[in-house]
Length: 291
Image 1: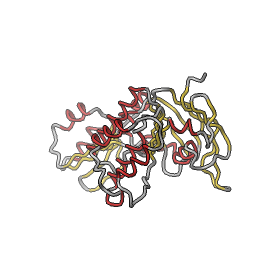
Image 2 (image 1 turned 180 degrees about the vertical axis):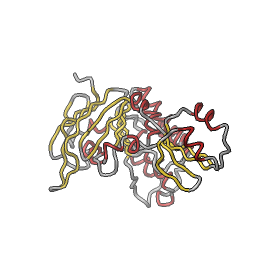
Image 3 (image 1 turned 30 degrees about the vertical axis):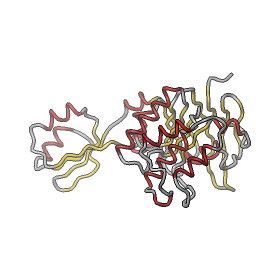
Image 4 (image 1 turned 90 degrees about the horizontal axis):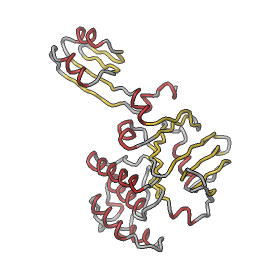
């Protein structure tokens, strides 16, 4: 039996002559959170939709628990939870109607888990879908993906639309799933998000996996954007010796690899009018892959 819960081998998807994915192979172990990274159009969502059977693959093989996945394999799909990047539900139904409908698909009792998730995410089941904000629609999607306690979670840009507080609640929820042994494919482009929850990362470009690595190794290469506005900006430039990517009057934006502690020590002697530190996206960090 395979060591991997989810395997994709040489997946190819073409829309006529247009490329969806060219050659995608990846393996995810039980309890692993695998970050699936790439810019728009790289093939992340095409790969995910192919796994879910929403589109047919041109060629390649997908395995779940060592068994080849077929679009009509209902039993395999019962153990998968899916959260798409955009939530499209029946507008005239209430949240309760949608969740009741989803419950009816399963022979096991999933009502307890549903109630836990609704409470945690602060959802009002009486509201109609059409009256929900983007963030609350995404929360409904999260409940739908998790309430049947799946063995495999497939999440596509999961936190888009969520406010920062709810994002942190969601991260905690996903890490709890990992502790349970849930296997997670996590599509995202936010470095801080992936760094918090993923064990390993695969980078996709033009339909092909171009690099795989652990988050630990990725962090070693991480940097930030540092923007400083000061009348002492020329002295600060000489002090920091960082690469400049933008400069206007007394404001400079740097690529920074100095630790926060050392940075504060170096800047303490200067009067700073404005200081901004921004985390980079994985596209920024690996921009050379996407040129």
